[in-house]
Image (cartoon, rainbow, N blue to C red):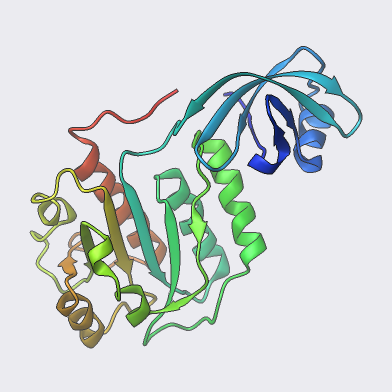
Length: 248
């Protein structure tokens, strides 16, 4: 498996790329990269670069871009996922890691009636996202918004081709695939997942009245992080069956 290095666009100067200090230390001190070696660099904004290192020091690594591609590892649709904040930081971070791996483009922590947590540790969560992006072969770093109240997350449903809300009381036949059957070419999808205890009936009604569609994730009750993962997989399966995904 080829290790990718995260280098934000600000560290690129024309065809020259300078690895940030932490990435340079990993490349030189851990992976023993030397001048002349080629590495893969991603910029988190859809850029994938093959780079030949030509300046390597104890904690410095820089090189020249040999090849550039766009949107490597990215799905042909944009999935935004709103997730009710859950009490366990570790479980939330598990969800974030897997969401990145499954192609989610935006993560929106939600304050709901049953939310037990006020916010997230942004730097720590972003580090989880960067690591997952590098590991899974994506070229875009998903965005992490500040926590939002549920009404705010549904104020602009018209910006999405579909807005889905997972609810355990929905008939299992009302699946994500069934909900997206009328929008096989959807470019933007928002999925809403409740916290521990799920959304209240009033919250589900608010979402559906705003234009959302209630869907089932199967016959069993799922934890929040599991529901998020299951929903991301279901959207991926529904929207990629007739599309050609970006690949290396």
